[in-house]
Image 1 (cartoon, rainbow, N blue to C red):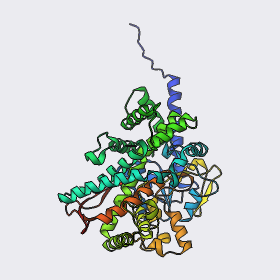
Image 2: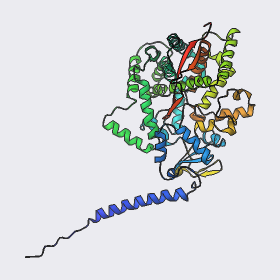
Image 3: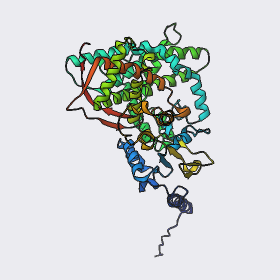
Image 4: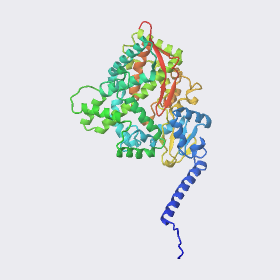
Length: 501
C-alpha cells in the first residue's frame, strides 16, 4: 500500500491580505496612541477614553444631558477640554470672537451634515461658506425684521387662540404641560406665517399631522450621527436604495402637498410660501430651494421659540420678585396708554425689562444644548494659548451653556436668573455679554430665524402676563430636560385669570 500524504498549503494571497490588515490596524492604533500622548494637543485633559475614541462622546450624548456634562468637564479640567481624539471644547471668552467672529470665519465641521441630505445640504447643514452665503442671500430678506413685522397679524391670531386655551385651563383648574402647549403655539405661528394657516395644534390639542414627532425623531438621529458623521452618507444611501421612509417623510409630504396646491394658482396672501413661489417664477430660486426653506422653517422655527418661552415662564415662576416687576411694568405701560391690545412689536421692543427677561431666559436655558463645532483652518490656529494643528486635528467648539455660565463674562451669579444684569452693565461690559450670548449662534451662521423668534416672544409674553397668573403644579411641576440637539424641558402649571381681566 502506498503511503498517503496530506500536504497543507497556504494561499499566499490570503496571507498577504491578512498581513496588510494587521499592519493597517496596528498602524491606526500606533497613530492614535502617539497623538493621544505625544501629539501637539496631548496636554489637553479630558476623559481618558476620549483620547482614543469618539465612543465616550456618543455614550454621553445618548444619555440626554450633554450640556451639563460639558459644564462639569470645564469645572474639572479648565478652559480647554478634550471631548474626543480630535474635538475640543473651549470656554475662554476670547475664543468666541476668534472662532465665530474673526476675519477668517472657520467652517462648520461635518458634525452638521446629518441634519440634512448629504447630496443636497440645507441652509443649516451646508458646511461650505460660499455655498451657504449664496443660499442665504436668496431668501435673507424674508427673515429681516422689517419684513417679518408684516406678519404681526399672524402672531396676533395665534396669541388670541393660546389665551383662549389658557382661559379654558383656568376655568377647569386643569394643569397643563407648558412646553407642549408652547410648542403647539409656536408651530401654529409657523404654519400661519409659512402657509397662511396654522397646523391646528392648539385648536385640536394635538399634533394631528405628526409634525413635532417627526422633528424629534429626525433630531434624535442627527444628534447621534453627528458624532460619527462619516456614516451619514452611507446610511442615507442605503435608505434610498432600500426605499426606507425617513422620520422627515411626514414633514416632506406635508410641504409638497402645500406647494402643489398653491403652484400655478392665483392665490393671494403674503405668507412665506407665496413669496417663495413668486421668487421661483422670477427664476431667483428653484423648487428645491422652496422645499428646503419651508423645511427649515418647520424644523427649527418652532422648537427654539417654544423652549425659550418655556424658559421665560419657568424662570419667572422660580423668581417671583422678577415676575412681579415685569407684570407691574406691563400694567404701568398699559395704564399710560403705551401698550395697545394686542401689543405691537414696536411697543414690545421698547420695553427694557421685558427684553432683559427674554435675554436672560435665553442665557440660562438656550434651546441648543450641543457645542457649535468649527474646523481649524489648514494652517492651524492658536486659541486660548493652545495651538491646534490644521484640518487633521479637526474641531474646536463652544457650547452655549458653557459660555452663558462663564463667571468671567456674566459675574459670580452667572447661574442665577437675574434680568437686571442686562440693564445695569456699562457699555463695554454689555458688549461682551451680547457677544457671548450664543442662543442663536454667532457670526455669519447666526440662525436665520432669530428675528421671527424674537418677534413671537416679544408679542406673546406681555399678553400672557397681562391676563394670567401661573402656578407650578405640585405633583408634576419639577423642571426636567432632555437633550438631543434641542434641550427640551417638561413641567406642568396651573393658570388663573388675573383680577379685573
